[in-house]
Image (cartoon, rainbow, N blue to C red):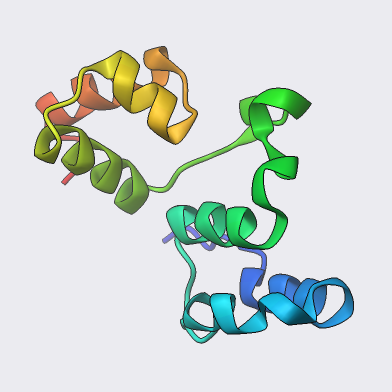
Length: 113
């Protein structure tokens, strides 16, 4: 069994909100009260706190993102539900079209639930 060490995003974002953005605490309380934050939760929380100033496309940080299988599944379900193509989905979630295509291929091979 693989033991992964994940950062405590709730604690990190709580500290940021307390010190720099106390006026945004009410907006973020739903996420901060969760036991475990998914990658999608972290992205939404980041947008709530920092807005568009933390745009990964502008800063070049996008290449270091990683997604867990639950988040990948949610992204693929969103694409199907909204009848989007790979380009539209990639733009919406700010991910690579190649990553999206790879995930779809993996799903078709039953590697993602």
